[in-house]
Image (cartoon, rainbow, N blue to C red; front, side, top):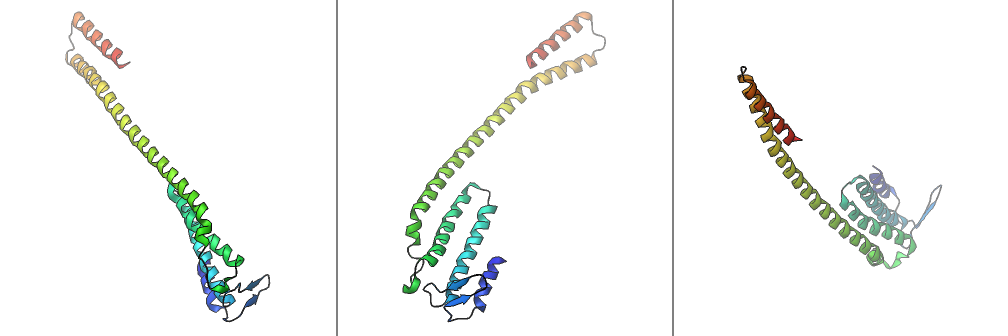
Length: 182
């Protein structure tokens, strides 16, 4: 909404005036044809900065720092609009060279972050595979032993009239199975 307001303001500004005297501050043309052109260019750049800032704040992925590159470039362009005299008609020409060292640092940091994210994903995939292997091995080991115990319980339930020797042998087998589990 704010960015739309910035753009709508420029439509209603009178053309051909070098300076706008407002209550709190004064807007000069800074070498542009008139102050309306300055406000138009600045409002477009400020609206883009707002869009990129909102995107940067709301993005949660690791690559969100890539949004800093256009933010840096746009803020440098806005700063240079007010610092240099644009009477030659050249705007936004040297800002890329001025921002180059900072953009290079951002690029290096992004490459390092990408490498760290890739490494982290590989570790996560490896750990997930190891967890599945361990889960499968535990299931196999304890699954078979649990089946043996259940089978012996069924055998015990079906044979109610076991002799003492058979009962002692079954008890010994169950104890051995339980020892294997622990």
